[in-house]
Image (cartoon, rainbow, N blue to C red; front, side, top):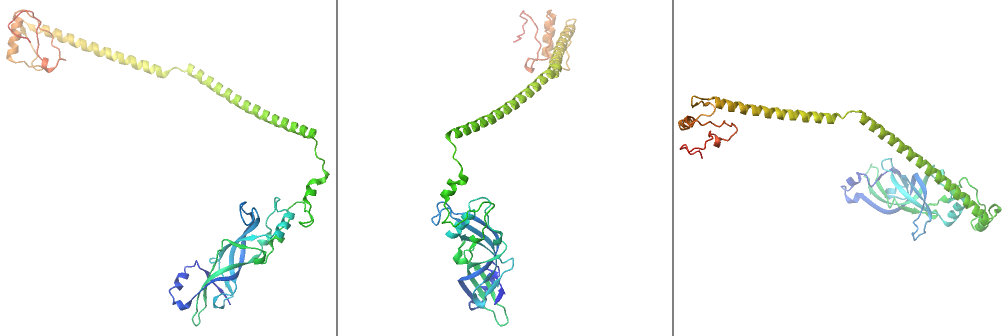
Length: 352
């Protein structure tokens, strides 16, 4: 019987576990044949330290399993998958010694030796081992089957297990084929008597080495000369640019320096003007203080600096003795805000 199935990654598989156990069938390790649609195939070589064959060539085949055939639960003999349930598989095909010998004669270790297109153009029937989960159908129902391929990303096959002899499909690349079987070919004679070539003498080898050395020296010399010319050209261009910048700098006035000199002159003039004005103010104040002494009386501006009666009497007494007052300095502090007169006589007043 042929039916459509699903892989065990389908979400419907979780739903069948809700059914009674007697309706669920579990089968594991069942051998089947998978129809594989090849998507890639290439030659590879084992690791040099591989115990099964150091650097031995093998072919890796990858593809999609579109269907399974074999003896499955519920008398199912073929199980098809849609695009969403196709399982990806990877095989490692081990060549036999005879296949490797034949492939070597065809040019296994030569360029352009590749996997033939016939492997891509056909659906391969390759062996697999599967696990199944099935639901026993009730009357009028169709069976439901879920499948999984064991170790599906690393399956090893050979001629005996799969029935194919892939070594025969390989063709030699565009090169000369060596006739005869692997045992009949004498490789020593092939390399020793190739076109009856005569081995070169020591003198010929010396001449050839000298020619090669001279050619190499000439190439290196030309490379050095080209590099030196490029450096020299770059240096001359930089030198011209520097000279041009110096000429432009000499022709143009130093605007920044002129601005600094002008600002300094303005500042000095301003300081001098302020000092002259301050000295003129002090002279005017002194002259006004002298003029205010009229007929032995001292007229004082009481609005700016009011004085009490004791100070006024003291000033009148000093003025009566012919003493001259000292000009008022408006820049003194509040503690020195009293006017003293220059006198050497003991007038009965303690000025300290």
